[in-house]
Structures are given as structure tokens and as C-alpha cells.
Image (cartoon, rainbow, N blue to C red; front, side):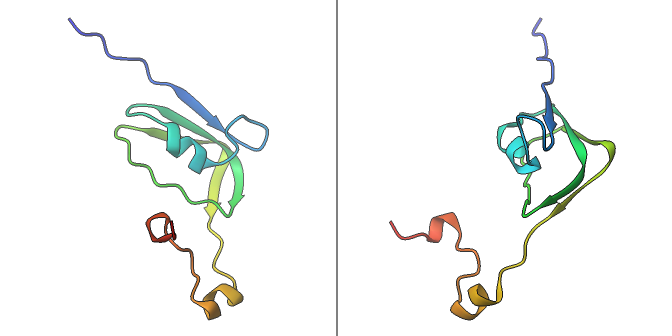
Length: 88
């Protein structure tokens, strides 16, 4: 019989190895547990592509607040080029 792997607990916070939720999103695997210290994570956005994750805040709520493009970037049309749009 095949044993299921134990989930990894990834901890996110200002004083932890993973400082931003997006860093955890990049390395998490299906079934992992993500614990995020309460606070505001400015300039961060995370995309979770894994399945069966448990994501919980520790000590309160964690707020991811993505930064809006600056006025200068909007005028120049450089609103966050995507990776595949970059010149090679």
C-alpha cells in the first residue's frame, strides 16, 4: 500500500525565512499548510496553483496589498510587462 506524504508547513512573516506569501506560493506543493503571520504585505500578490492547501493567518489576518502602477508607468504604457512580453 502506498503511504501519503505528510504535508509541509510553510511559515511566512517578516522574521521568517519566507518573508512574503508569494514566496510560499512558489514552493508549496499539493496538500501543504501555509501559515502567514498577521500583518500587511505591501506590494505582494500570490497565485496559488496547488490543490488541497490549508492557508491560515497566525495572530490575526494577513493582508496582501498589491501596489498600483505609478502615474509615470501609466503614461508611458509600461504597466507591468509580463514575463513572456520581455524583450530577449
